[in-house]
Image (cartoon, rainbow, N blue to C red; front, side, top):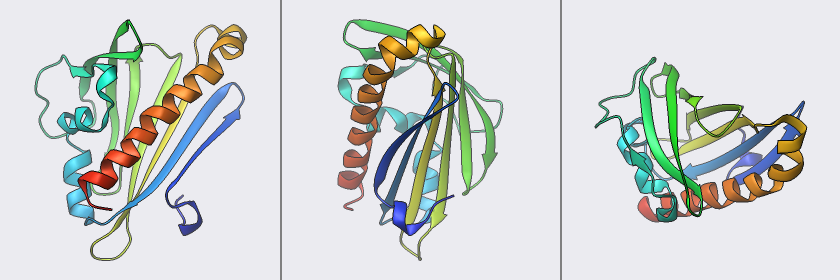
Length: 168
């Protein structure tokens, strides 16, 4: 899944009407620290651009678990505030977890978060987001480039913020 040639990369691919964003980043923290930070839904706001107005509306979620439903308000585009509901569908502690959209702006949203130790004080993280736009070919024709640009900005912000937070 992850290899050293992909470290610190952001790649988009399209296949069968599904778009996939893969982001790989190495951080100078232990696997335990990485898991503690990323498995807490409350930390998502810290690594999301302020302009998105990200807000968890389902209360203060405790430790993540498979089956957990989390609802948000988010503005993926200026003046467009949306309700978004995701479910944590899979959790293998300190290896990966998956969130999937149940209600929201995409026809499909499947976000995998993978963690791999890279020595005692480093971890390689991989985000793999597979998504499908609504409205089929029309959605792809008019929205694919806009959504890709937006996701590049969001995940680029995330990469930079994590570098700063963890002194990478």
